[in-house]
Length: 188
Image 1 (cartoon, rainbow, N blue to C red):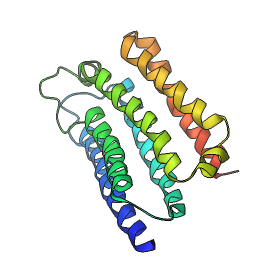
Image 2 (tube, rainbow, N blue to C red; image 1 turned 90 degrees about the horizontal axis):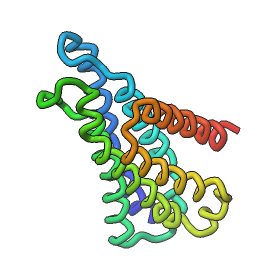
Image 3 (tube, rainbow, N blue to C red; image 1 turned 30 degrees about the vertical axis):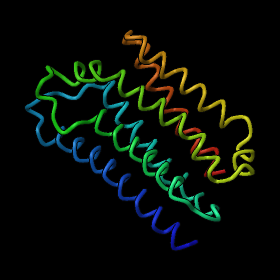
């Protein structure tokens, strides 16, 4: 089974690597092409959150070593689930925004899709965690399901509310919570 896990881990790493490359490549473009479209702070907050989320997910998937046997449905699910992270990176930081005046315009034209992909990711995360075993799921206690459900609700609000202050607060809350979760679970 170790050979199967290695194959699964390799596919996950390739897809997530593409996502990280997408974020880093376009972040460097902002520096390199500073005469073009200027960065937008809210957009950059969501880019940073997406980066942290992917790094956390990549670490989280190390728990897949505990899966005793694999079938194609589980493998297919993981590829789909991981692809959602890649799609999120392309949505939040595409290679070009020529059809838009600014990253602000781009973000608000695509924010519903961005939050919809986050909703799919947080919902699919339940299945991904159960794939690691019911005992593992229970070991995460009450915070894990509450975390995902609250994130889903906040994403729905993110879709519905265009208020700039709300959008900034939401981005900062997501970032602070993700960092807090990582610190509390991996550094204590």
